[in-house]
Amino acid sequence: MKKTNWVLSVFITALISFVIQSGLNNFGVINISNIWTDLISWVFIFFVVFIGVEATFKITTMKHQTK
Image 1 (cartoon, rainbow, N blue to C red):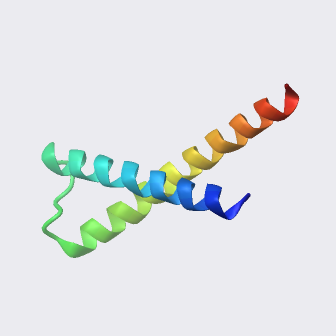
Image 2 (cartoon, rainbow, N blue to C red):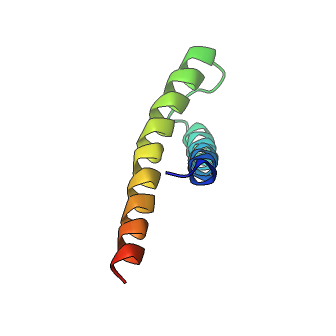
Protein backbone atom coordinates (compact mmCIF):
# COMPACT_ATOMS: atom_id res chain seq x y z
CA MET A 1 0.00 0.00 0.00
CA LYS A 2 1.28 3.47 -0.83
CA LYS A 3 2.27 5.68 2.08
CA THR A 4 -0.43 8.25 1.25
CA ASN A 5 -3.10 5.55 1.27
CA TRP A 6 -1.85 4.30 4.63
CA VAL A 7 -1.91 7.81 6.14
CA LEU A 8 -5.40 8.39 4.75
CA SER A 9 -6.54 5.03 6.10
CA VAL A 10 -5.23 5.77 9.60
CA PHE A 11 -6.71 9.30 9.55
CA ILE A 12 -10.16 8.04 8.50
CA THR A 13 -9.96 5.28 11.11
CA ALA A 14 -9.01 7.69 13.90
CA LEU A 15 -11.78 10.10 12.92
CA ILE A 16 -14.42 7.35 12.88
CA SER A 17 -13.08 5.99 16.19
CA PHE A 18 -13.41 9.39 17.88
CA VAL A 19 -16.97 9.80 16.60
CA ILE A 20 -17.97 6.32 17.79
CA GLN A 21 -16.34 6.85 21.18
CA SER A 22 -18.00 10.22 21.75
CA GLY A 23 -21.35 8.72 20.74
CA LEU A 24 -20.91 5.86 23.20
CA ASN A 25 -19.99 8.39 25.89
CA ASN A 26 -23.10 10.51 25.14
CA PHE A 27 -25.35 7.44 25.43
CA GLY A 28 -23.68 6.43 28.70
CA VAL A 29 -22.21 3.16 27.41
CA ILE A 30 -18.66 4.12 28.41
CA ASN A 31 -17.33 6.67 30.89
CA ILE A 32 -14.70 8.90 29.30
CA SER A 33 -13.79 10.51 32.64
CA ASN A 34 -11.78 7.37 33.48
CA ILE A 35 -8.50 7.59 31.52
CA TRP A 36 -8.03 3.80 31.33
CA THR A 37 -11.53 3.22 30.02
CA ASP A 38 -10.95 5.99 27.50
CA LEU A 39 -7.66 4.49 26.32
CA ILE A 40 -8.80 0.87 26.17
CA SER A 41 -12.08 1.69 24.42
CA TRP A 42 -10.34 3.94 21.88
CA VAL A 43 -7.70 1.28 21.06
CA PHE A 44 -10.38 -1.41 20.68
CA ILE A 45 -12.62 0.78 18.52
CA PHE A 46 -9.60 1.93 16.47
CA PHE A 47 -8.53 -1.59 15.56
CA VAL A 48 -12.07 -2.72 14.72
CA VAL A 49 -12.59 0.30 12.47
CA PHE A 50 -9.07 -0.03 11.00
CA ILE A 51 -9.82 -3.60 9.90
CA GLY A 52 -13.03 -2.37 8.25
CA VAL A 53 -11.31 0.52 6.48
CA GLU A 54 -8.47 -1.73 5.27
CA ALA A 55 -10.98 -4.26 3.94
CA THR A 56 -12.86 -1.48 2.13
CA PHE A 57 -9.66 -0.17 0.52
CA LYS A 58 -8.66 -3.67 -0.58
CA ILE A 59 -12.10 -4.42 -2.05
CA THR A 60 -12.12 -1.08 -3.86
CA THR A 61 -8.63 -1.72 -5.23
CA MET A 62 -9.59 -5.20 -6.41
CA LYS A 63 -12.68 -3.83 -8.19
CA HIS A 64 -10.60 -1.21 -10.01
CA GLN A 65 -8.03 -3.81 -11.09
CA THR A 66 -10.66 -6.06 -12.67
CA LYS A 67 -12.05 -3.26 -14.87
